[in-house]
Length: 410
Image 1 (spheres, rainbow, N blue to C red):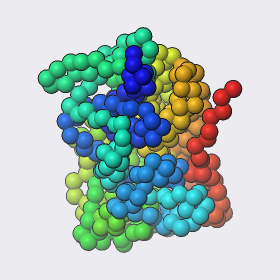
Image 2: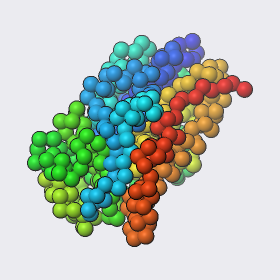
Image 3: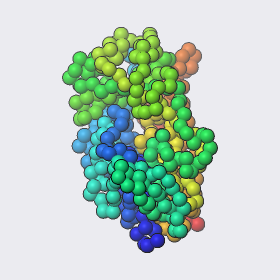
Image 4: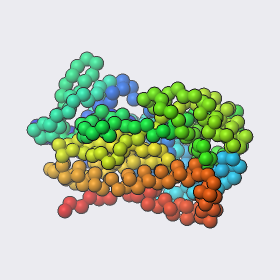
């Protein structure tokens, strides 16, 4: 294998994880071939929260300035009781977040992040993006990995020293890393209901009456919780509500009975019910997770990142951030062990696992607290009342204040 092929990175999936990985490797001088199954790159989902641990990396990769053209810096995360609309707690963001964590907390359309990543990739040297293609087979080559890439018109092989599976929760690359039944994703039992409303619309005015328009507002209730925040420089609001539900289509959105959401909201404030009614059609999104105990890497040169490795419930709002962290740290670690990728992959996986597991536990704790009833809800409200905004922010230092570490070769 010539030097170019020896250094080439093959990435399956051009979503947030794959594009970030492409930029991170290209920044370190690696040629990157990015394989995307879709004919056109289109973002799925509606809104996205990007905490400072993610935006810090986006700034390092030259993406942040592009994203800021469409993103919003919310002033705070505000927790409200969905029945009374009483404020329970507040985490300061905005300038306070940037001063505390040295990077902004942003909310945006997922498409805005995708566009910023794509624009940066188009400017970067050494990144080739092939759309309408998929990796159909993987084999060990003399000096790395050989991937069979299939398009509508041809099938060919491409070689490199690393294949990155960034192909999401329904990853096909995951099966190349683990043959266990647990390598497939599983439905969590939760549905996410999402809608985007104009700020000047009837629904937008309904939200302004119950929420905080310049903040991330989270409404807490025993049967559901809803998160709402501004996007498109405040011209619209992204709404996402979470309920229990039955398994629906294997995709990012599908048809589900809206009566599920209405039933879950029983006992909430009339203004909140009016908001949900005025928002129009809601799309249901089945939340799938992946067993985090399965391997993420192989000694031969395959690595899974983002949802392909550890798809989790979104209750810590860290899915995209973990994918971005994965991509940046993987490139850093492989560059630290340029002639020993097997060691680099092992070091990377061992370093990432504890943090991802801690984030998943935080999400589970949030879900428990946000859907609490009876004495648990009383205890939650008392805790939030006694905890100042500054202390609530300090509780997140481990998460938002994280910075990419330099790997020391031993």
